[in-house]
Length: 81
Image 1 (spheres, rainbow, N blue to C red):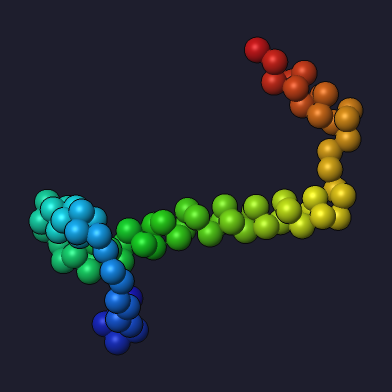
Image 2: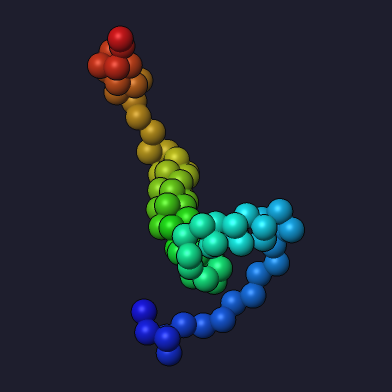
């Protein structure tokens, strides 16, 4: 990402989280802003697909698109240890 495409965003952190950020940034020799930006990107890469899948599951349930009793029984038979 080029410097011109970055935007500033302010966030308030607890003293404990700020200290953890400072410590980690020092450990890896990188600026706190860079560490925080990367951590936020990683979190969103992980969390957004989860929320999208959950939203789709709820929408399917709202449309009464559930597994049949037979499908559920077959699933548990396949996964018995």
